[in-house]
Length: 85
Image (tube, one colour):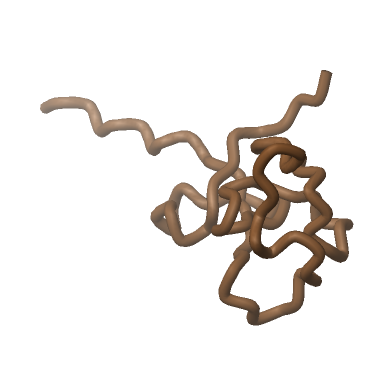
């Protein structure tokens, strides 16, 4: 069984809830790929299997600055609420 921290695309979280970068998030198939993957190979760490529905970016390199993917970051817990006075 693979265990991983809850993650999300960096743009979907406020800065105070963003943790370490844990992968690469594809906007096409909404899946997270490992950091060591050089290409979108249809084998996500977390997400759908592409056998039935291939992503339009499959086979593309995870090049810096490409608009179809962004870093996936760890979701940090919400800050504790201040006690009521």
